Length: 265
Ligand code: 2AM
Ligand code: CA
Image (cartoon, rainbow, N blue to C red; front, side, top):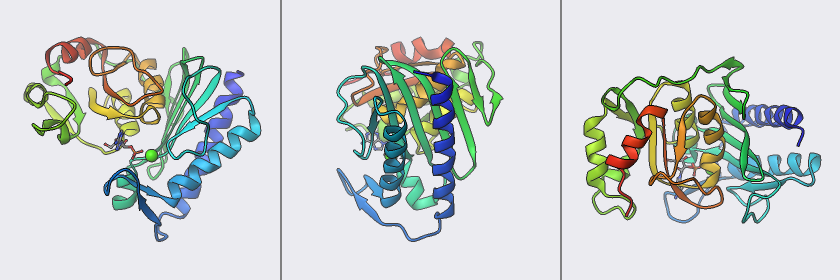
């Protein structure tokens, strides 16, 4: 693919979609639920994904679209160019707070993450990366992350769900030990923004036991461009077509977190 042109188009479309959402943020929402009563989706999630699918297919007919709301293709592998799209990441924040949500787009070619964009819509902050060319925040280069700070001086974002003993995915005692070791924890409610905040150095890591590819795709590209490490919770390579656990941190603490704290069930 023509990486520069695809990047420019993606950026234009993300900003356009963001402006559309901001203009309508105070209008009444049409909310439905998906897998459970807390799994929310709005007309805005669907309209925004439809907007991207239309732009992508109209401009790049050979590219595939892998999106949360199903307006794209039925993607089972990452052959060729695949746009992995979350039209609104942090839908619960969108519904309850009308802020703290993001548009997330990762563009992969033959399985390799080449372009990542995360747009914090209400704050008008755009994080971008092109593989091999570094990452930026609103056009300003994001520096490489510290390799010195130890785990006990680190802040992680983490959902408290993983501290509940009867959760199905992880040994909560290991996560509780991690919380005790860390300087502190945060919880932002948008995986994409959590990756972006690690890349920006606001937090040092993000650990979660269940994400879909569209929650991760852009964040992985952006974080890796500033020297961060993104794997599944057991340290293995992320499978970008399946649900997975995720451990995304600065370089020097990643192994320790995997080896000493995350015990997947
Ligand atoms: P969403 O808002 O696009 O659905 C909330 O902690 C984060 O996890 C959000 O990024 C949210 O994405 C994602 N998320 C919510 N429910 C999820 C689920 N069942 N599986 C994977 N990711 C989920
Ligand atoms: Ca979403």
